[in-house]
Image 1 (cartoon, rainbow, N blue to C red):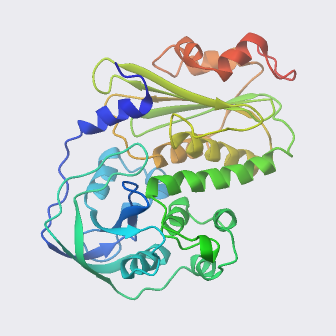
Image 2: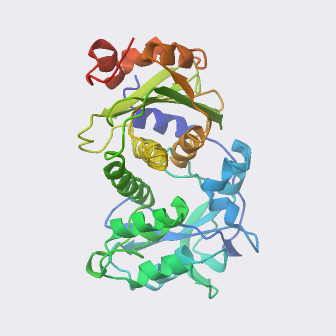
Image 3: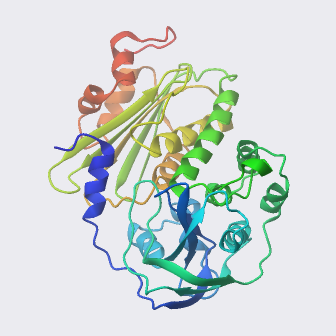
Length: 387
């Protein structure tokens, strides 16, 4: 019996059988730019570049912010990702003077794609899928690796040389400048920002959540000062075999994320959720990085509108769904909140509307929820008119 999201997704991804690009022991190609830092055996981790067996501009292969706005299909994204070859070598997370790490920093700070040459111990094989990070193609240990000289992005270069700037402040500052999240996360992951004595490699999946959390916490501090939304509002978006419904409520900040996986491996209907009150979240969420990605996307939209609200997000993943990483949540919720919202006078009307767009009855989500169920029962916030 599957009892948790991590167990469910592990079973789902273990059944993934997709053909990745075929390469030999030597590879000359272009890095989008892209790197990957593993978490196994921390603090000694596998670190290395991701290289496409193509020359020229391969940036689209590692630019998740561009995929949904340009209507890339799930097949497009999988083809991009399985065409990236992961080189890896064991490195201590504090060994930033390592030649490979210096090259990974050069890749992560680059303005565009970088020509690379790699020689592997053996021909790369396999592929990796995860709900936390984007998929990638075959991997193997690197024997030799080199990159061309490349121009660095000015904002990232400035952060790199500012060794008195805390990493969280660097992440927040770059986000405020409009830098794509994936660029910020890669620079954070390779130890290219933060106080000099504290810099280190951060595994890719950890760095994604760290950046989402830093930005989200900063935005929440801003949103808390804004006036409360004056009605219930529902924003929706569908893509990549998912449907998202974001219900904003006229309350102080509180948040619940609920996701349903429907008939992906068979007849299963799995619902996972987590929540926080106005005081915030303590401890790491059992539903993983998507909790923080969604939270950041919602707060980003509220800050843009200069409003405070509570948020209930319902996600359904359907037959054909493939785990593509938490970007899937962040970018879909971002796009949902850019769509015109439908306004309602009370929660009952908003939930009734959402129910017409979902495959599961809303009652199933309510039964599995914590915050939503509590709001319906008693309306914790006195400003909330449930029915």
